[in-house]
Length: 217
Image 1: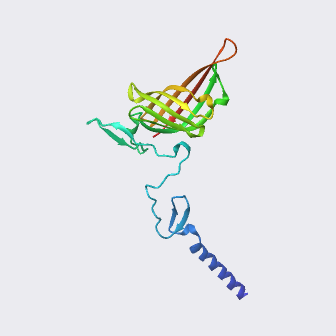
Image 2: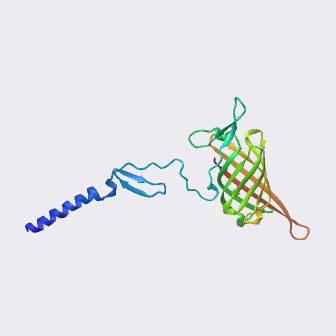
Image 3: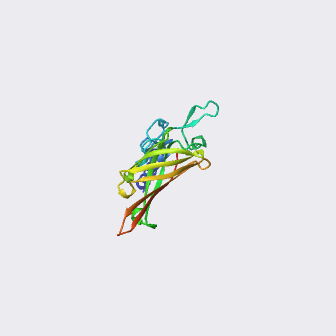
């Protein structure tokens, strides 16, 4: 009986010691390294360098370039980063890098073609001289063309072409606009292309392609 009680006490003590020293949740610090691995330790966590690479995907594999906005006093360009910390200065101009989800649509003679509908991330950059470059990696498209200011510095008219798209029906020239909404810190992109193709005898097929996107810095 005494031996059984002794073994019971020893087992209880072992359980307490395991809870106190063996369970990682009771360690002083819960640390996460740059790769997302979680460890528990009494020592302070090592800080992650602010310059460490952020894992991204598809069109978001590079950080957007800083946008240049006019200086109200000297007229020189001032670089802004466009962060979401409340700074809206990067959203006062259409120039710079933009990225976000886009929607591709196609219609034939006014009837929407479901096979031409797709969602894919897009990234575009509008240079100070008006040159537009960009890509839609998931769809295989390259974007190139020109942008001109329309009414205000936060509105641009676009004349661009899409090339190399996996769905070749979208490889054409587009006209549209990009409007920056400073209050919501986003830009709305709308591109439309129209292609006329011969159909049955004495008929013409009107194929309309469009790209819509809501973009961020």
